[in-house]
Length: 143
Image (spheres, rainbow, N blue to C red):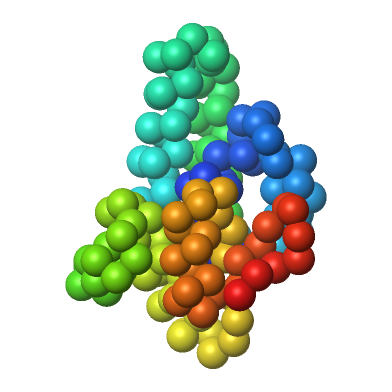
């Protein structure tokens, strides 16, 4: 089981730095994320389309693949108050705080460490500070 934020999930679909590492690391794993990840992933696709790095047909294929895979992910709701507190405590953007709050809730529910994957530096540091084990391609898990 790995909790994935959107920056990690996008690497399953779009070739960018560390995409291969993500694909190898996530293979055969239960992937868990927050329900906000789906609109965030579509936002990432839309941004790349607007920048001209994705064609309309590529966008549609990726959308189809994401929606198909979405059914295989464990998608969790989040606690709004806890996420809001994470914003203030760790100076995070709203959706990053949602991911952190959701991962912490998951770890409490399963009563064991849950690896957390993000490629956002601020979220990475906040997750470590909150006691999560953060996966990183550069080195062993931190936290």
